[in-house]
Image (cartoon, rainbow, N blue to C red; front, side):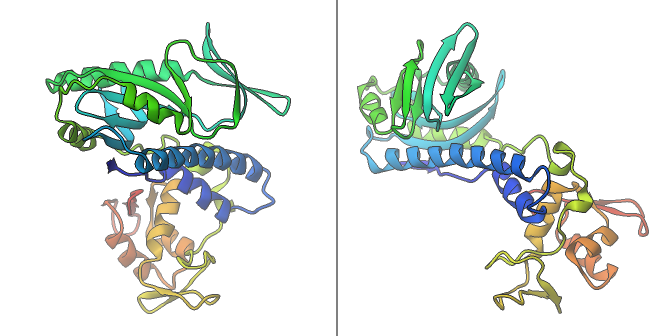
Length: 314
């Protein structure tokens, strides 16, 4: 049963907005496109594996959680975790193709593809950290349960030159048989443990917002205006208390909310009424102030030089 479903990462959403608001001919557009492609590949792999897990029968009372981030003895972020009454299983998902080599000294994953050799962080070292963090977290809540780890390639499109030595590696549906091979002695209430992890899981906020600063791009090169929620056209036109898309004729009262999230992720985490007026393409400062009051966490400064603190969640 899927207890914590798939959710697109804020970083991927930010990269998509970045490309929409950056000139396609910009010198760094290709680099951002490459990064978005990597993020999409990773998340598509996780979605595919979640589909495999939910479409196949699992042991009774086994719960599936996607993207769990827990602060323990170390901070851990687990792609997918399964919790049964008998065990916890951490799945590290790698959506890679080409020729893969898992090494121990130093621990890394080497991928050779189209005459290019790329090095990735060792999945085995990641699982070691996740097991340490999860074990410590559960023991703090008086829970003891066997914890297993496995590496999963969601698609059968890679050649394994040298497999991992510590944790098993599976392709796609091969993980199902392994799940059924695990012990069946019940030791924990699986749903309650899953809910505990969700309760303490913190949504990961990308560390490098705003992205213009991270990629060393002048914020003035970012396209201004509100994006149409229907067709994606920028900008929409501001009418009285609503937004109108002249391309598809869509009207929306709240289209500015995404635009302000884009501002947070791309330009700055705070914004003044005059900056909002220019960025949202509003008619006056008073309209900007009204929108910011309804869509910010707090305000600092006096009336003439105030700033509003934005949030990634609107």
